[in-house]
Length: 270
Length: 262
Image 1 (cartoon, chains in turn red, green):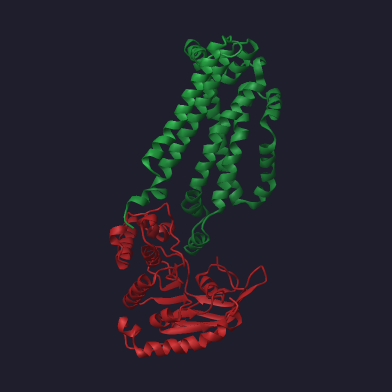
Image 2 (cartoon, chains in turn red, green; image 1 turned 60 degrees about the vertical axis):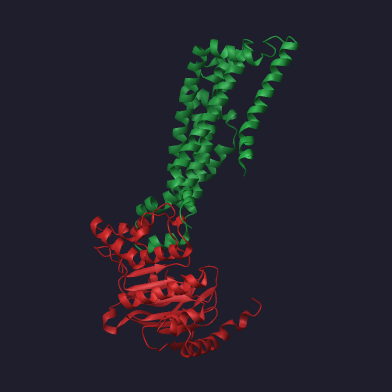
């Protein structure tokens, strides 16, 4: 499934999880959605891609996942193939929960393992662990329709975690949720990140969410998306609700908002 | 909806049926209309009972034909849709002919089929022709309406074509397939009847439609009505059975959720 411009890399040497070089994507319709974009993501980093709708940040995420090939440039990530024990280096969470309505929570989370022909005993153990990590251990037998929006998103997160990925790609995962649920999921995601030491690339159009969650915030331009500015959010860890109300947080949000404003300047009419 | 409205919905059609039958009976009796002009409902019912040995045998023949045609339509429709889904070129090549087969009235095709095929086979082929298209088009629609992100997920995890078909496309298409089957059931009966009528009394058949044609030539009007009644009941039962199966298969993820939390 790797396109000609994709390459696997020995990420250990560089300490990088993902490296994008002059990556651009032009669709068949002639619209250039992205780039050229350069991006290095260090292992274990939590990076947010922040930009207006349609700036190609989701496209960048899909390219990193190997869903489609770039029109130009190189995308370097660790080996993307399934491993024998059901591990897979990339976990993806979409904007929608993207669950199979005909399958129970357990079977939905099991999907990546089933596709990799993982041993049933090992699969059971991993599913239990993944569901416990997102706090849904008791809901294994429920069907997606029986769950709230936040719970469905948690199932989607568990499915991404079940392969014990190195990189977690999240495409505006909490955009459709109410604020309280979103805050809670933000905290849970941060706790998971601290515990599991995954590399996280998080796509969002919320300044506040990006500053709250990330080590690095990459502000992108309007389409075709390029890097406009980059912020390192240096604050005392672990973050919690105090950070959300601190002066530091407000300051970062103001800086990031100012950097983002020009990306919207061409969209006044929208 | 209130329970009163529910009862009304169940009861009113029955009341209308009773009133219609009563009126029919009344008109026939008061005007002393002969059974070969218009038989009364009681006469039709008596004929149904007295001719049951003949009619039940015909009913069995028609139902068997319908079942064979339906199974052929279901298997053929789903299989063809799967083939189309795997190969765009085959779909482009063959789909127009499936449409042509569908839009050409089966009553016009039946006489030709009867020339080239043994009658029993021709009848089944007619039932298949009218039944397979809804299955084909519905299954195709279902296979193509898979969630784009779910398909992306399968791609991400390196799913094979067979895995994608088995775990994603077929389950996603299931409600559409069942909808197609529900239509195909009734159409198979129509196809069987049309072919029997086309074969007419010249054929060696003994299905219900054949009985209707035969009774028509003999002016045995009550038996025509009785056979027609059986055909209607058969159609209703077929539809009901398929609807029930569809409900049972889908209820886990279409309806079961409503009772639980949230």
